[in-house]
Image (cartoon, rainbow, N blue to C red; front, side, top):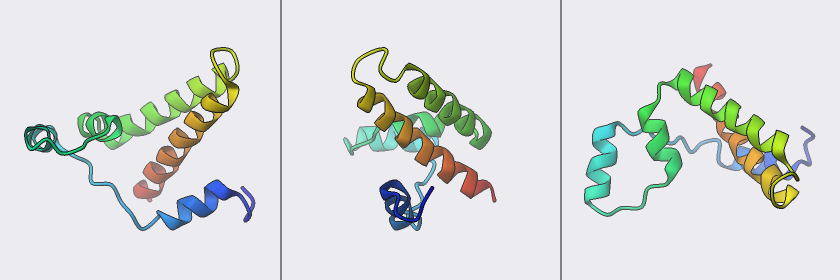
Length: 95
């Protein structure tokens, strides 16, 4: 990635934000309080760090390979970018 890549600058801006991996009990507790949870938090709470990396890697490949074959190409590339960011964050956390 080049230094002028908008995704890289966005990632650097959020690099200090670490998402807490929620346990299943946390997910249940937050759902009972009707707080906002997204799918990432719920899925991540169910997986080990290695499983999360595999999930991100597989989903990234899915969107990259199907780009333009099902719906708008830009939407699939944007989804691949999201999973690339999550994958990079997970790999950073391993170091």
